[in-house]
Structures are given as structure tokens and as C-alpha cells.
Image 1 (spheres, rainbow, N blue to C red):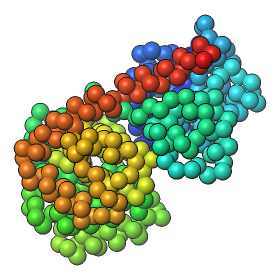
Image 2: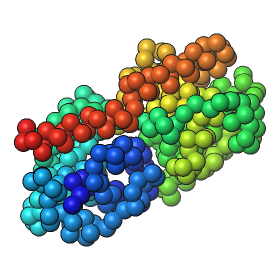
Image 3: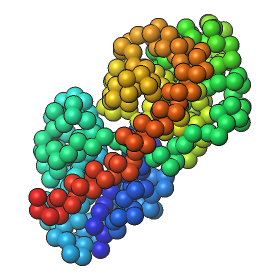
Length: 347
């Protein structure tokens, strides 16, 4: 019988989905694993919640219980029901990245977990039952540098000779407006650069999106600042390695995988002081972190990196090295595995 069930109840591919998929691709080599809910790239075909509960009635060989690894509120709720109401022989592990106090209901759910893995020391301050702090990692086999960045960018067909991008939902929390403002400052000084906004706006943020587009049109940069919508997960690595710079300026970020995906692809980043970005920055060797809400500083940092080819090449090389050594999905999976083994051993 399976020893590990990993849940994914969100049909949309989010940052949480990406981190789960990265780890699952490592874990399938060590566990009889079932993905429960919706599909994830590179993961086994998913099974239903009902099927998972049926399989969980019997513990795995040589184990007293299977582990359900959950990452969202509905997943915690389902797992608690399976363990406490159906009395299935399972234990529940929750990964928490939030660097702020959860609201009342998630706090209640988290208190019911058998173990919590925090992604940062700061996140660990807001949750109980923390067994380990394990930073999220990027799949360094999937996200790799381009053999020729120029050729990779040209193949995308967006024009110019270099690409700059922000990735994520189009909304104020993600700082899409700050990215636009920074590019309005930067692009006039870099006529060969094209900026991409990769992501979509929900219905409630269409007005926000329309205002951004009007701002860009008013500056005459509508052909050089493009909203390309969501990119399929399997197409994102090729797009990422074609970029020259990633710029992420969120007002809030629990962790933030986009700079890591860029780094693994040999792409430096500029980020606001949010999430875990400062740790990724490696004292300016892989990226530059600026104060929140400071679009002008972000533009200046981007200019400093892109206008100095020697510095850009050095940062690109360091970015890949740091991603491999300190923030790989393999390292994350190993940290999570230690928690599992401690639980099975009764520690």
C-alpha cells in the first residue's frame, strides 16, 4: 500500500502547486506515492479523495501509518476528517510558508497537524508543531541556463534583444503596478529591451489591469511592455531561460519561487524586500533587493545589471550555482524526508 499521499486540491497552477510538483518529482524515487486531487507536471496521475481514503484504510508495509502531506486549508480539512472521523491510520504533515499570522480557521486547522514544516525561520514563528525549517527548492534539472540566451529570446518572437519579466497574478499584492512603473523608468534608456507580464488578472482585477495598460499606452510603450497571459507550466522553463532579468516587486510574498526559477536558469533578479528574496540575493551576487514600493530603485538596479555585460554574466553564473547548492528541489525533498522518517520512527 502507498506510504505517502500528496494532496493538490487547487485546479489552478499556483506557486504552491509549483513547489509541490518540484518535491514530488524527487519523492517518487523514494516512496510509493499517490497524488490526490488535480494533476501536476511531472507527477504521477492523480487519484480522487475517495480513492485515497480507501487506500489509506490499510497501512503501508512495515509502517503503522501512511503520511498525508498537505499544503492548503481544504487539504488539511480533508486529512483531519480522514484521520479523526474515519479513524484511518494516517499522520498529517503541513508545509507553511506564510510570514504573517494566519486567520482563525487556518490556525485551528494547523493546530491539528501532526507535524509542520516551515519554509523559513520567519514562517516558523507563526505556526505550532514545527518539526523542521526547509526552504523551498527549484527543480534544477528542469530550469537550466540556455546555451545561447540571445537565440532563446529571439525564438520567442517578442522583439528586441533582451527580455525582462515579472511572473504572477496581476493584482496589487503582487506589485504588478510597481513592475510597470519600474519599466516605464527603465525602457526609455534601454531601447533593445522588452518587458513581459506573465500571468492573468482575475475578474475583480480587470479594472486594475486596464489602468496599467492605459498607463503604458500613454507612455507609448505598448509595443515593448506586453501582457502575455499565463504560461503553461511545461513552457515556463524555456521562457525563463530566455530572459535577461527577472523583476518581482510584491507588496507581500510568503516565499517566492520566481527568482529561484530564474536563478536556476542563469537569470539574475531584482526583487522587493519581501518573501525570502534577501536570502536568494547572496549579498548582491545573484540579484538585487530593493525597498518595497520603490519602483524607481528597482529600475535603477535593473539598469545597473543589464548595462554591465561583465557584471550580468557573473551574476548569471553565480545565480545558477547558488540555486544548485542552496535551493534545489533535491535539498528540499531531503529535508522533508527527514521529517517523515522521524515520524515513522516515533521521534
